[in-house]
Image (cartoon, rainbow, N blue to C red):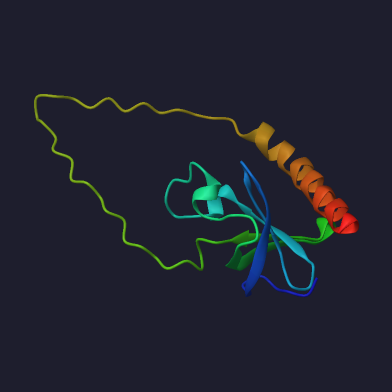
Amino acid sequence: MEFQVGDIIVGEVTGIQPYGAFIRFPNDETGLIHISEISSFFVKNITDYVHINQHVRVKIIDILEDRNLYRLSLKQVAERRRQNIRKINYQSDRKKKVLISHHDFSKLQESLPKWIEKEISIINEEEKHD
């Protein structure tokens, strides 16, 4: 693999899934921007941030050599926008209830490598037909 962790590279968006966007570099290597690395803000829809054939600057945050795949971040190279934080007026006679929710994401974690492999094989098949 040609690039290293920390490198910032321009790549082309080749695929978008609910969990992230696939990027192809000029040397035909590929990477994935996970939805959590798209923006510092809440991302409901990835297409609000990137679209197919768009060229984006991304930072390599990890290399999965066994899959020939880079883990990428868009938010680490994007200009930092200052978040507007609303001031919340608390009334002393009202008590706020805090609900703590524990979610188990292990099924998603187990499925992600399969989804990535599937998308890479689709991209490779499309390249063969072009």
